[in-house]
Length: 83
Length: 265
Image (cartoon, rainbow over all chains, first blue to last red; front, top):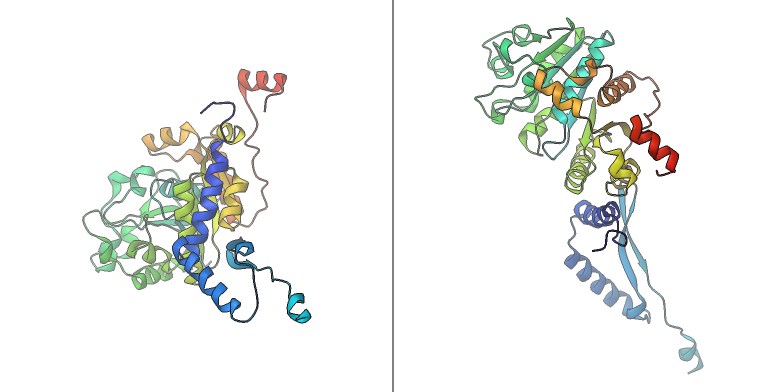
C-alpha cells in the first residue's frame, strides 16, 4: 500500500475496537445479531407492512452502555385505505 | 488514619501494572504518606525486583495467611522511604493459596495505621484478580494504546461494574506522542471514548522506565524522567489534588525546534 494514500492505522484500530467491544459487552456474536434481526422482522411483519430491505438494526455504544437501535420504515398504508 | 485500598489491574499482562504500582507507591511515600504495597501475583512475583527489595524477603503473604509469621514480619521496608513497605507474593505457591477473604482480612489489619494500601493484581480475570479486587476501595485500570490491551481493559471494566466495584479510573501507559501525532497510535481521546471511563493519567513511553527497573529504582525518583513526572502527577490526583494533564505533544531538542520552524506537527 502506498505510504501516502494508506489509511492511518489508528483509525483502523479504533473502528475495529468499536465493533469488537460492542460484541464483547453484549456477549452477542454477529451471527446471533443477524438471527435476532430476522426474528424481530418476522414479529413486526405480522402486524404491520414493512420494507425488509430498508430496515437498519444494529448495536450502538453510549458511554459504557449499549443499545439496540432499529430504524424500520413502514410501507404506506394508503392503498389499503383506497381499497 | 484509615487507609484507602487501591488495586491496580489490567486484564492483559505486560502493560505496566507492576511498574505503575511501584511508582505510585514510591511517589505517595515521597509525599509523606504511609504506604503498603501488596504483590498479588502469587507464583510470579515481580514487585520486589521492580522496587529493588528482592534481597530482603524473609516472609511473604502466604506465610502471613498460613500463620507462619505476623503481618509486620512480612512487611519489607523500602530502602529510601521509611514509610513505604512491600508485602511480597509467595513465589513457590499458586494463587489458590490466597482467598478474597484473606485479602480483606490483611487489608483490614493494615487500614488503621496506613494511608494507602496498593495492590498489584496479576494479569487475567481469574482467582488472582478476584483476590486483588476483593478489598479494593478504588480500582485503577492500566492499559496501553493497543487493540489487545484496550479490549482486555474493557472486559475488566465490565467485570468491575458487574461486581459493583464502581467504575475504575484509567492509567494510559506507554503512549508514544510521535505515533499519535502521525495517527499510527490510538490517542488518549480514542481510548477514553472506547472504554467510557475517566482518566487519571497518561504516561508517555520512556526509556528511563526500563533503566529504573534494571536498577530497582522506580522512575518517580528521577526528576528528569517524563514517565516519572506522569506517575508523580497520578499520585497527586490519588491524594485528591487537581493536577493538569501534561502536554505530551511538546517536542524537545533540535529536532523539535526544526519541526516547530517547519510547522510540521
